[in-house]
Amino acid sequence: MLFRKTVFATAALAALASAGVARAADLPVKAAKPVKDTPFFLVIDDRVTFSYIFSGTDPGAFSVNPNGTFNGKTPKQVYSFTHFDIWGYGTNFFTISMFKSGHNDPASPCVNAGVLMSGAPADCAGATEIYGLFRSTFGWNEIFGTKAFSMGPLHNISFEIGADANSENTFLAPAKRDFVAGLQFAFDLPYKGYINVAPLAYKEINHNAFDQCGLFGPGVPGVTCLSDGNTNYKTTWAVEINYYMDLGFLPENMQYFSVSGRAGWYGPKGDQNSPLVGTGVGSNSTATKTELNSEPIRLTFDASKAAWGAKYTHFVDLWVAYRYWQNKFGLDHNAAPGVCTVNGVSTNSCTESSLYAGVTVKF
Image (cartoon, rainbow, N blue to C red; front, side, top):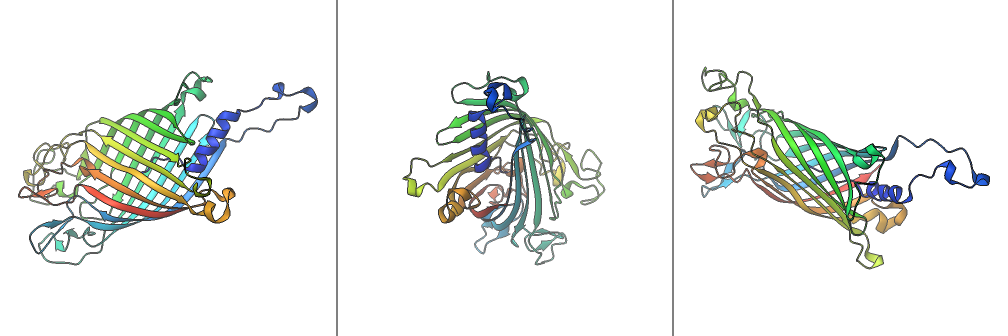
């Protein structure tokens, strides 16, 4: 989940904020000229990215090593498009990605690596996931026509809304839809940097084929199974943070590097098979836990600036990052029998700790 403003957009926003917009009445009469209409979008920034997650995970997707331990890791290729814009009252960020897993995270009809529902062996292809995220902010300074919400390092306070959605061709067939709403507090960092902190309300609905009535016998809809397999979780809290900063303290001939990162905490949202409680998937259901989805640091090398000069800043970026995702999708990595654990032993599929690298191109 990526919540960073692009470098170009950040620099442009800072320039616009510091310069202001001159009005005709402020100019000498002899210099007065018709003022062009301000464009609706002050900044539009579109990028494509190819990246690689070396040790990704998908809860419940694992194989058994010869020594009896569990291997819950799978590499993932990621193809992404991102859009960022600034307009008169705030910002919009949108990203859509395709994740292509290795065979340890299999597509349907396998229910796990190398296994069909019948227990027969099968070599299913790696799963493909489509994931999209949208965040939009409405700045209080812009809405109320004031600078009262800028003081010290505080740059602005904004209303924030957003949504996520995914679909994956595993047997589980997740179809996540979540919605967030709350505030964002934007703070300045040195070297044209920023850090944004957003406390939010979070609501999720999803799908779980293992909760489908009829899969493990007739069941009782709404009591031991779900008639359509759709889960519905309780509204909970979330906090999302993202930051960016140029490494401006480096010598001038080395100022091609920047650091950025993000983290999202999502509170417990009820039983993992909500609205069922302790009765789903053969009564192996447990309460969800606080989820941490993070990329604490990404180091970016501005290859286009290094090769062609400042005019081409961040047209081509090479980057390497670290991902850490605990209690993935809210599942308790120490419990969730059959998914995160088997006979009390971790499947190593509900926590993701991985190196992550890619190339991003602006167009």
